[in-house]
Every structure is written in C-alpha cells, then in structure tokens.
Image (cartoon, rainbow over all chains, first blue to last red; front, side, top):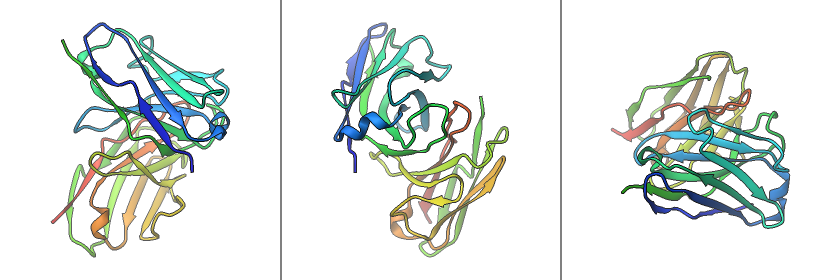
Length: 123
Length: 107
C-alpha cells in the first residue's frame, strides 16, 4: 500500500513563507488526486486544498485561498503545499491525504494519510 | 459551504457497549459521507465511505447509515481499541468539510 511522508514543517515567523512536501512510496501516485488537511493541536480537521492527478485542476478552501498553492511533481512522486504570508493561526499539523479518484469533480474519500508535519508560526 | 455537525462532542461508554454517533449536513450530500477514526498523535484512518460502506480491514462491529442530511456511525460492541476521536466528512461538490469530532472516552 502506498505510504506518504510529509516534510518541510518547522518554526517560521509571521509573514514568511514555507513549502511543505509529501513524498509517496509508489509511482501510482500519478493516478490519484491528493489533498492537504490541517489540524490545530487539540482541535479538529480542516480541509485545505485538492489537486487532480495531472496537476491541471486545483481547488482551495475559502479560508486560505490566495495564500496557499498546491502543486505536484509526478516524476518525483511528490506533492507540495506552498504557504505565503503565514499567520499565527496557521500553526497546525499538516497532513497530505490520497483520494482514490483522479479528477477533482469525482467524489472520493481520503483513504491514505501521511503522519503530518508540524508548522509553528511565531515571532 | 456545507457545514457538518456531529453529536455528541464527547461520549463516555464501556467496553461491550453499543454506541452511535450522529452527523448532520447543512444541505443534502446524497450519501457522499465518510467516517474517520483518529487516535492521539496519529493520522486519521478511514472507516466508512459512501455512508455505509466499510473500508477494507475495518472490523464489522462498525456500521454506517443515512443519506441526504442525517447520518450515523454505530459501533455494535465497543472494544478497548475503539476509544478515539471520530470525524464525519462530506466529499460532495468540490467541498470536503469535516464535523467537529466526537471523542469516545472510557467510562
């Protein structure tokens, strides 16, 4: 079964940028759409963004639209999340998750998750 | 955006109990609903999809029901491994919001 490993988290000052990565263990990576989901410590899950299997289609939650960019490199089996103008309220554990569909418009639950990478925004 | 509301927020129960968690959508989502289990420090785990379909490897004591706006997750006989937080999520119409979670605690 595919495994996902996130990286790139850390402590960053407000207003700065950060790019998270999610490496997949299989080349079937290119066949699926992927999501980013975050979780403030001790709180619930918040969906952030989705990208189609080929990277052509992307969709974002209204709360982060304009500050986040989701992308992928299918040649490297890697998903990315570029975050700009970070705020203290962006402090959270960021998960990547696979959905078993290729296109954004096709409904699919999140069947494989990484363990998350922690982002802390603080001065 | 579609809002998902779970109840209760916390549920205290004993091993062997039958428990039900409910989830309400602010508008109809057909049956595009998933349930996840999350333990402290771990990623969420998919339990159910399409409201009532059991994910591979998930014990049959878990079951899901509902369609439209009202959904439920039932555990028929609680096991020690089941004490965790449960989330519902819809995946309908370019929107993937989660419920606020239900923490299942040992009584």
